[in-house]
Amino acid sequence: MKAKLTLRLDEDAIKKAKLYSKEKGESVSSLVEKFFKSFDAKEIKEQTLPPP
Image (tube, rainbow, N blue to C red; front, side, top):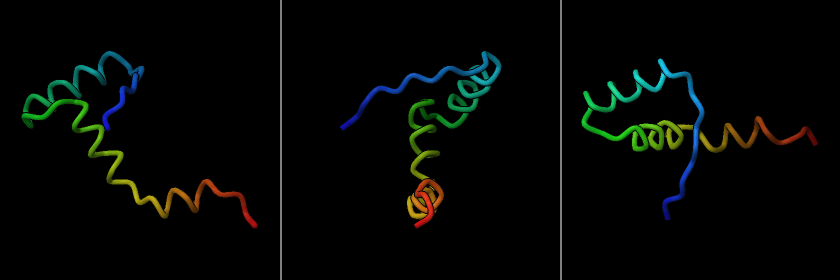
């Protein structure tokens, strides 16, 4: 299921993201999704859990 996420970024970063996505032939959303999916879930969980 797809859900909507709103990001607030510097205008220059948005311009660069749009240019990059156009060069790659992918949407900015697709690139952001791939970026987040590249995170190691185990590593994230270990960093966010308080020590026992």
